[in-house]
Image 1 (cartoon, rainbow, N blue to C red):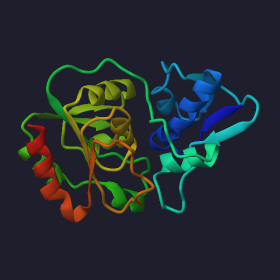
Image 2 (image 1 turned 45 degrees about the vertical axis):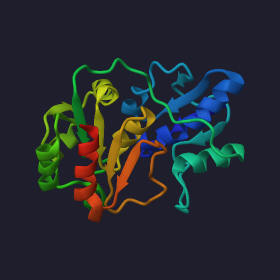
Image 3 (image 1 turned 90 degrees about the vertical axis):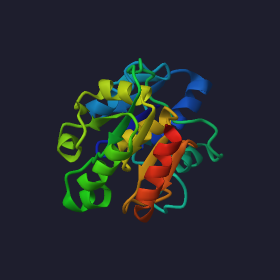
Length: 231
């Protein structure tokens, strides 16, 4: 039996099915996982719960494409209930890493696709990013893929997935759009603010109780309130 990280259903989608892996691990030990995208695999190379395989072994139990197309609960809850017929009792996980030191916040403006319609549903304007910079009481680090670099006004780490994990792990707070690293921050249970545009909710929401969600009409107020609390 194995679990598959399906090509095109990347980091955020895979994080959402990790509660399934956690339960299977408790029942039978390390779980065979086939990763189709290298950057996702790099987030789990030290996982105590996963045995990384290079080709299918036995029957596929579930994949990261197991999403809630009905949009009536989070993907994480939906996938868990689909497999076990019970409410989710395990949290999403990602590799534990050595956190970066210092006091800083993280800003993420990511996208898993370069299709313009997809970008329009997700991306946060430079003008609003300037507002984050103006109101933040600490330095802000930008994170993302190499392509995300052009979407972010903040210097930081782009293209080095393990380094990005370390920055998220050590951050005082994380502000992001709905992207893969948003789910990473949720798995690390960070204080976070998610800026939503037109992505489906609740399907795409993470299950971190320390996450504050803001619709586009709420961005300014919730940003200011969030950063004041984080001082």
